[in-house]
Image 1 (cartoon, one colour):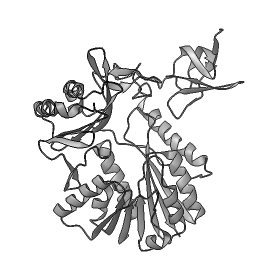
Image 2 (cartoon, rainbow, N blue to C red):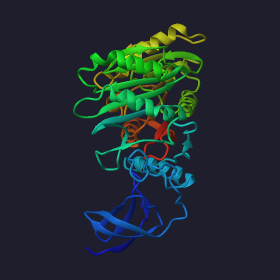
Image 3 (cartoon, rainbow, N blue to C red):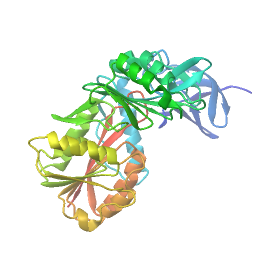
Image 4 (cartoon, rainbow, N blue to C red):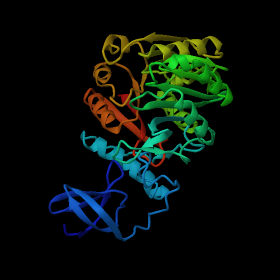
Length: 410
């Protein structure tokens, strides 16, 4: 198969370089815009690529695992063009729905590293591997370092590997979730071996040896040495086992500030897909808040935190599946502002009801620009004006991006 030279003109949404050719786009892994590449072209992808003109934006990767690990895709891109690329991802998603508004510069929120990680453990002969999957592969990279994680999690990796070995299923992988709290690591093991109950004494002993705050297996708390506590703007919240938290503490602060600014002087706020109350607790310092969340454990953690909180206005909460039963227009009209922060699937059903409501301000938070653009289109078509769009980067070196959008009904 013959080689040819191609020039990279843009960076794709997954971090691959893209060259425009007479036969359509060609995707080149690890290539950057402006680079000239010699490669074999097979089904729109470059093979055995050699860079013959290097971009001035190229920098050395910071991790020894980068060439194989699928956890990061753009460690080779300098910070300024990297943040600009993330803004472009949001702009393209909006443009795809016919939304043409200025998008703010990306706010970096990765300082200190990620406090939440989801790793995979598997067997390799008599060894236990713990890490991330290789790029475009089911093979696992046994991670020895990870510059995007908080150092406390990195230091715990050898012990977590030993802990995972106690619960590995005979077939398949073990999911290992780790959350760094103010009182230590909260660890959850999912898809554990069906006979893990026989190993509870060993698992408990290892939990104590590693000084973990809590260990859960298949959703069951095995041992809680001390409650894993998150500080929600001065309110202590015990994390739900395997529950969601913003990946970095800095991102939690940045996103919360954007939400508070967006809500403005609203006196009554509905916080939809509220989780454990990351935004609700902060909003309740300036407004009456009704929090709605479908996950029972998250609502329970939020309720427990409220019992210890002080200096909050009236807070109510409701467990409700907003995908199946969104708040209806008549319910929404009771609020001055609505905040919603759904999973990656977005909030289409809820956005349809909001579009028909009289709510004055909507603050949309999303980890998926594509579904956010779809939901914003519904709101704009319903008469809302999109006032600001702000990307927030908390997943360093990856294509993932958080976005906060503020809309007003004039």
